[in-house]
Length: 233
Image (cartoon, rainbow, N blue to C red; front, side, top):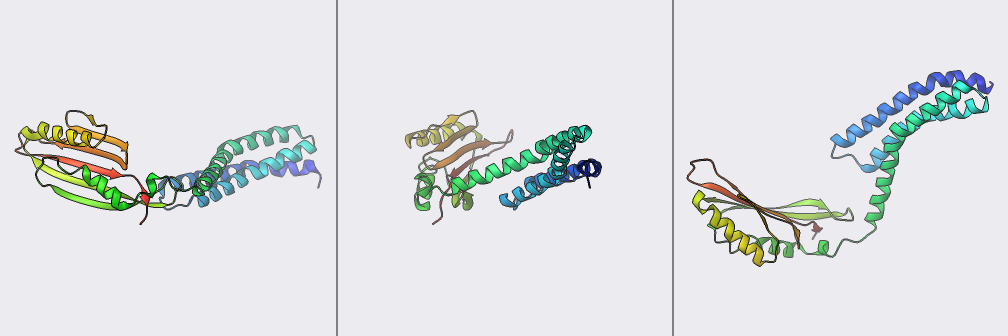
């Protein structure tokens, strides 16, 4: 079969396969965004399959048409190849780059802060709740899974306290907490009903919030502290 005789079937097949490849790419993108269990390598594989299907016939059309000097085939092949590269090739390339980046990071060691023991993390987190001049509150402490800077598994401490206070005591409570946190060396940001610190020492974030309904006898003051991710014990 001459090269020109191959051009016509490819002119029919290439657009169809381009659409099929784009659909596979879109499905991989949607699944990756909606599923928290999808592995990065699986997404890359799906993108790769979509790109091969989208671009395979288009590239073949371009090459064969150029050899046979089939002008319409060359133009169609170039356009379809460009579309395949843009719509399916770009997500595939970005996914491969992400895998390489993750692989490089995984070879590195955790940072010095991340090797801190959970005992020390608990102690520093607890300092934000000590000596605040507040009545006893309802508390909760939870350790959850997280990822270290090199994408290894780690642990993260979340601490929560809820205090019930009369509205007239709100400002005194916020003042007390601000003084205590400042004395511990933290830079504290404050507004009318909130205090916060961001990413200092072993603390990832800490926030104090005041909520009270108009005319209520008591309001709720909450302290929410999240520690950094550290190596599992």
